[in-house]
Amino acid sequence: MMKSLLMASLLLLSVNSFAGDIAKGKKLFKKVNCALCHNADGMGKAKNGKIALLKGPQIAGLDEAYITEQVIAIQGKKRKTKNTSMMMAKVKTLKPAEIKDIAAYVNSLSKTRFVGMLQKK
Image 1 (tube, rainbow, N blue to C red):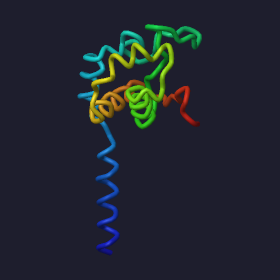
Image 2 (cartoon, rainbow, N blue to C red):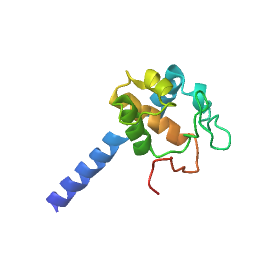
Image 3 (cartoon, rainbow, N blue to C red):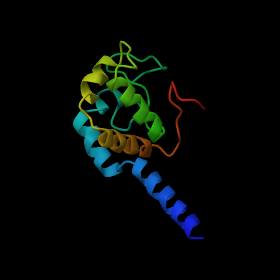
């Protein structure tokens, strides 16, 4: 019984450690100026899926883990395209906790969950 309670407590603590802070994320979203390409509502500026410099895709509603993974990949130059160069300049100094906070905020922008370009369904 005690062992089960301990395991349940550890699981809850580990889940919370991965969640970002939406309020902090909102401030960071504005500070980094994500809206420049993705709009203030996160719905993106790309028309008909045509991504270009300053015309980013919809990010509102994306899974927090996916957003975090992609931003870290851009920071580490593992995801590099002609359209990620602007984003690299904006995210290169973000700390992991700040990325999680932004991811939590972006996820909260839509009640409809959205699957990203590289995200498995």
